[in-house]
Image (cartoon, rainbow, N blue to C red):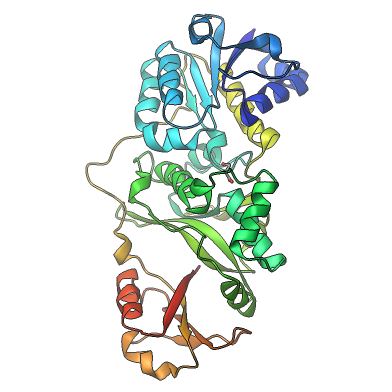
Length: 411
Ligand code: HSE
């Protein structure tokens, strides 16, 4: 019998109990033995339901239960979740989580703790919700050097941007709708400021870099708060959509560049199909070439689907350290400074200006005007492959008195 303990009976935690109950027969055939949720730890009071008998508020009772071999951590954050995860791993119990903040912050240490105690720390649900991406990247694509990852990895911001595009709403109206629908939290900062996407691309980059830990704080991150209806008009004019992209590119010499920022994404790019709360992640490997992972990046049962798959893996490989990752802190940073990154951007300028005036600011570069429905503005696309750095772009725009805003173009 595989006994599961769940830490945190919120949306994902309750979804895990539900998926195990819903698909028990299939799971038991896979495991070749019975599986059950033995205890659920949560300090809150809940209405009577099918799992009421399993709930406890007593952490000692939970951790003293020696029958529990796999712990699901769906508390979130890096406080008590960190403490409980460490405690379970030290007891030799495998831990499975959807908590990207904890993985992105303490992944090195928790993976080592799992290794030392002959158990597993799995986090398939931490990126892309229910979409398989962690295991494919770590295992199925292990023969490749991962050259590029470009992902729409935050459902809330993708919903907001889709609403702005399709219903012609401004940012605050679209955010209110996302909150009304229950997608955005009442404090939506982690989503709209790009922090959630930053943690997710840090995790994917650490795997792509073969276990060299990428600290989220090293990733240049911009959110979507400043995206306007004018930006949407330019996107339409260019046959593009505006998406919050999390991008990783690697270099042969062992360094990489990573950014989280809104981008104009051409509609011919496969990941541009992800609208609403859906996520899509493009992964390029030097042997496989391009691939794409698409599906529900959030939600109760979708996220639980990934958590329960990890539970099965943990249960099947108990005490064998199988499939466990190993991350290490690099001796020196491998993330290229933001200022040195190459960029292509649409810049918006006040009034009807003569583009020749700006040629000297963008030497030897294409400057293409964009014809759109926006009045009293001029928009130019500047920079092509390898010509314009973020530093040059910032210096140039600071010298243009008509400058309003810029939006990067994905290429
Ligand atoms: N807040 C996250 C999102 C939840 O909107 O994508 C899933 O990680």
